Amino acid sequence: MNLTLYIWRQKGPDKKGGLQQFKAENISPEMSFLEMLDVVNEQLIKIGQEPIAFDHDCREGICGMCSQVINGVPHGPQERTTVCQLHMRHFKHGDSIYIEPWRARAFPVIKDLIVDRSALDRIIQAGGYISVHTGGVPDANAVLISKKSADTAMDASECIGCGACVAACPNGSAMLFTAAKITHLAMLPQGKIEAARRVCVMTEAMMREGFGNCTNHYECQAACPKDIRVSFIARLNREFIKAQLKDTG
Image: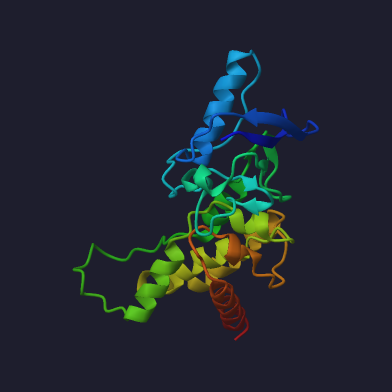
């Protein structure tokens, strides 16, 4: 199939960017979206032009680095799919495809389709871990955890930190990401010890990084490739209120 691509090109964070038109020809429907971009880059290199810069790593849908907005949708039109797992069979011969980087104040563009997502790392660094001594590794059934709590923690831990929720949110909010990380630990016995401090410092870090507020648009949930639910945001809010009451009580 032959396609017309409109791709965001930007030489650096302080440079002005814009969409440029490219032709993608003889593309197999079985190619992944990133493989299609590889073909375009090979063509550009052959004619002496600079290839399109884009982020990727695992190409298995588990690392979240392939952050691109395709036709206005983070990670593209296929639900529960990252860009690297999106295949060209979901497009038609002659289609025009618009490819842009994440759009958020907290994600400055580094070059072309690559953005700096280290703000999410700093939220984790603020408190997304367990630092207290919990003893040696216990037997699997030594610490009893209800199935509901275990399932909720497992669902929250599926977040890969790609930032699609931020890119989809009209406010550029990182509430879904932060809520998933807080819920993952707050549901387990080892995480409860630092739960109050964790929710406070991670929320403060999120606001400090320049992310917007959540106003319940639910676009974050719709764009998430791992189907992280907005119910985790409600749990974050409950944990935050509990922490505040504990401080004042």
